[in-house]
Image (tube, rainbow, N blue to C red; front, side):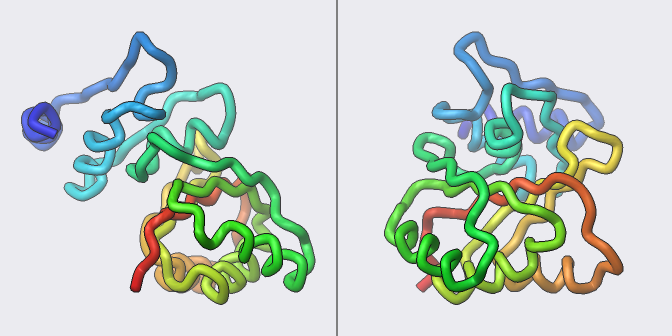
Length: 166
């Protein structure tokens, strides 16, 4: 956390910074996620480099806690079964990682609100490609952004905070 302050100051002055690790993917199960979160809070763009999987690449640039996470993958296509699956995950306190299709992402987030409440999430789309995008906010904010679009395209990885909003 102390190092992050100095690094953020350098970034704000125009420097470029790369976060590397000699122990695997940076920020995954290490305190580097605090630097990523600090950069996000200062509206500094965080760009991941290609990783071993979309889940780990998204996690490394999400700013969410990475010391404990649970990869879920794709949820069931139908709402009833999806809600049943989400209820089994509701008490997990770790960051949850989902893959989803662009055509189903809005109903999936609607179902997540039903089960989880309006949790904080990070939606990553088209990582490491030309149209890479990270949307951050509570589910309701993500829905507002997605519903305002004419179309949603690309590969989506959705990371959900394990912290419940009471």
